[in-house]
Image (cartoon, rainbow, N blue to C red; front, side, top):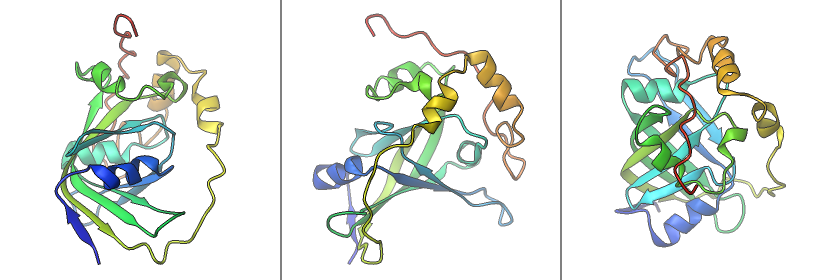
Amino acid sequence: MGKTYARIEGRLRTFIEEQPVFFTATAPLTAEGTVNLSPKGVSGSFAVLDPLTVAYLDFAGSNAETIAHLRENGRITLMWCAFSGPPTIVRVHGRGEPVFRDDPRFPGLVERFPGVRTGNHGLRAVIVVRAELIRDTCGYAVPFMDYAGERPLHASRFARETDETLDAYFQGKEHVGTSLDGLPGLPLPLPPTPPAPPGA
């Protein structure tokens, strides 16, 4: 049976931090809008900021549906499931916000992800989620799967980009500045990468 948690801590926190992949789900307010579901898997790109707040790094891609939906209504669900060990599924339902490069909070948030070379992935935002409902359920129908490692393709594709060429890439994509349903997506032009804080 499912259990509701008041905070992300202890074994629950350990479980979600150990999973190599998680999923995000968002949707626009209109009933005719496109529901979006995205996998996230770069090692070290997820962090628990406090017992009710989590964050993850939003990297370069050819769409920006999550950003568009969060800018419109903030609703988001994150999900982790066990592909090894005891069968478990954890969902965090909450309100999310994209924090962009020109936000004064951006550098401090990026410091919470010390294991990621963000320049290799075209970092465009940090998604911060405040949990409103934290639940686990059984994962009896989720198959066992072996984790073989990360794909190197994303880093090899975007590590060569500068701020200028990355902006041009985003400007050339139909659904980065605007969502599939016409909502405002990633604000363009892309602000430059903030300088690293002293001593970083």
